[in-house]
Length: 217
Ligand SMILES: N[C@@H](CCC(=O)N[C@@H](CS)C(=O)NCC(=O)O)C(=O)O
Figure (tube, rainbow, N blue to C red):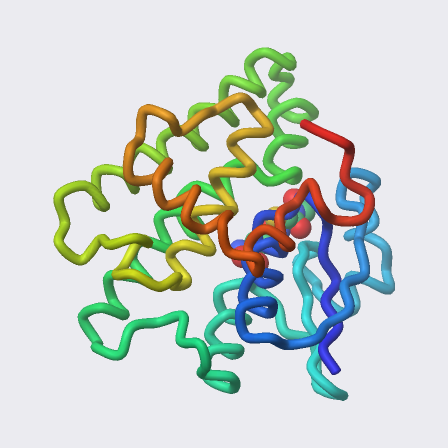
């Protein structure tokens, strides 16, 4: 039995949902409303002292946190279909692409950062939105530069089947769309986004289809 504490809009939860769907693993997701501050409730903090989603429980085990660690755990315990290439160099490329999004850009736009900008640094709404759009856009532009003209790029970020890099990419693309940051001028990102969303496991996991999501951005 897999139970995930997530949130409809959460990019990190989205990545894990896709992997669970691709690997055909049944799970239950309980939403933690991070807009309402539920991540700071003592009961949740006891599971994840970072006050962030996702937290994943498998059977009676202790909570697992950090989406990339969870993705690697799922890969090791349920290797089919593989979300990492068979060769070490390929795995390094996939992890490197994934980290552009998950380590370098996503952390700059999460709610705790947005709150610090407005509450502590007194940024107004326009400045805060400019910050968010800047970092979304920069991650996507940098990834496009990595994907372009690289023979390892295929139908997906690496070859012709989805990898962890695609999971991290698509979660930033949909988050960026919520702030009117588009990818139509980034041909590889746009093309790979389309290929991902054509797969049911991705389409079912998209933020706007989760309980609690608004009808549109
Ligand atoms: N690096 C973490 C990021 C976790 C994270 O920051 N999650 C966001 C939602 S995507 C969150 O819960 N934020 C709560 C907050 O910022 O207050 C991961 O990949 O799991």
